[in-house]
Image 1 (spheres, rainbow, N blue to C red):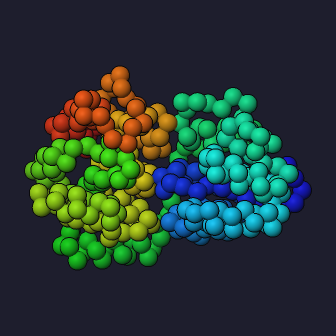
Image 2 (tube, rainbow, N blue to C red):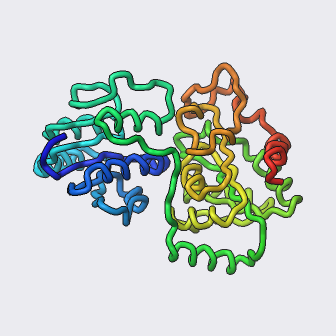
Image 3 (tube, rainbow, N blue to C red):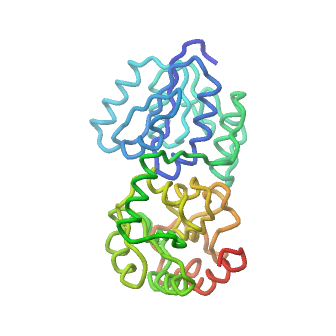
Length: 330
């Protein structure tokens, strides 16, 4: 590797992908103990890596030609010696190339990179792909285990919220029923979630509906069935702390899936339009909920009406409860 001690790591998003890459980012930092290392990410994900040892964070607003132009000028001026592109998008390849770094490491062979795995594993899990990137420059691969410290402040905030809502000595189950508005096909049917919540409540579980502002209307409706609406109540670290209080979670393929997996609880996730083999939460591959039909994964943000969302919606609430019982959680 280059002799200069200025290193850039690019990981722009999304939330789950940043969390998934944290073990690899730590491996890069450990491999360069005397380096000045900067992580470039989107503003919404800077908190994920806040406080990480040996790492400074620069947030880049990804939208707009002017912002991109300013960033490219900034990159050129920084004179990084090494760039690790953990993103692998067209935008990040342009950033890597423009940086002028003498050593540029990427996920797949490209003219933007000086180092990349010769046989990038198409169809492999994203975690394994990033390990291939590390190995191509003789860095020890990351261990597939997520470890994120919620912090005492987050734990206090969660304890206060639970007390405020009268939750004491309850068996908590966290449910994220939403998804990005761009990926409505990832959502299990709302009626199924309502049925599942009723079945869980009948087994003395307290359901907490988690999510962002985009999930507010959905969670409001579901919480009228049973459970507590926690939409927007918790930041990233507080959601980890809440997860550590729960027995298990049932979620969509989404950012909260990875956050709750980092809380080291069982996380059951619905997969249909996306390939669970590539993007399941670390340590949770045995808890995938899917119907392996021929059209899955389709990578379509909206399921065509004639396919009737059979990859997910043919799974009933009773099927999920049976799975939980078989796993000893109910």
